[in-house]
Amino acid sequence: YNSIALDISGKAHISYFGYADDLRYATNASGAWVTTTVESGGDVMAGGYTSIALDSSGRAHISYLGSGEVLRYATNVSGAWVTTTVDSSERVGLYTSIALDTSGKAHISYYDDDYTNGDLKYATNASGAWVTTTVDSSGKVGEYTSIALDSSGKVHISYYGGYGGGLKYATNASGSWVATTVDSGTYYVGEYTSIALDSSGKAHISYYDATSYAPPKQDLKYATNASGAWVTTTVDGSGEVGEYTSIALDSSGKVHI
Image (cartoon, rainbow, N blue to C red; front, side):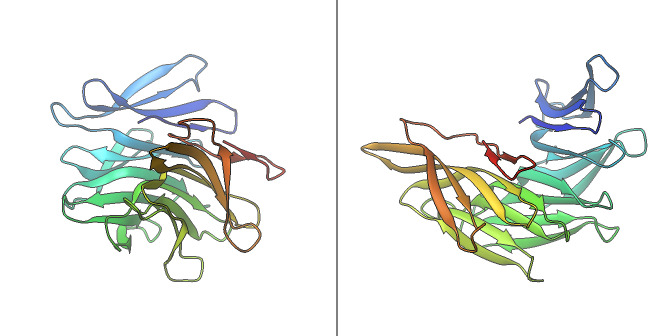
């Protein structure tokens, strides 16, 4: 469950799950690698599903699954690590993804799995206090979330629509949340999503397509609405490929997965 971000000096900051059920953090900002235990879980898992982002001062903000299976948030903005429970619903905080706005406020997408239902949820402290919202509850949806903010601070989330539900995308760019099915299929289409936005606020998503197992069809795919409509492309179909995707755009808007 590792996640990485680079500061303006190109130094690395990594959040990850430790062997002793800990949330760990590592950085080479001092010139040498230094590792820190941010939260110790003891016999209870703390530090799963981590996602890290840095603010303009190079301070770290981490979302993760905390002890007791709740959504937790950690930051060293004050100089010392401070951890906060954001959502304490039952079995909540899986598949977290974090992004920061221009004010350094956190925006987190995550999965709420109470064993019966599965929802895509969103949390932010942009108002000064944490506010949580259910974005999509149409079935067992919300795993493999990835979040990005556009230049207006609007939220864009890619996620898995559940078995047979396909790749989904949600945004509040219109002022209210709108969820869209981008790509659908029989089995596991839309797992392992990763989203990035271009300078026009258009979405670019990499994901895994396991449409068929007999014969095998597991592909790395890519979707974008840059043209105004969603277009999906098979990037690599050479065998059983495409899990654990991560996407980034360069300064020319070219895609790297």
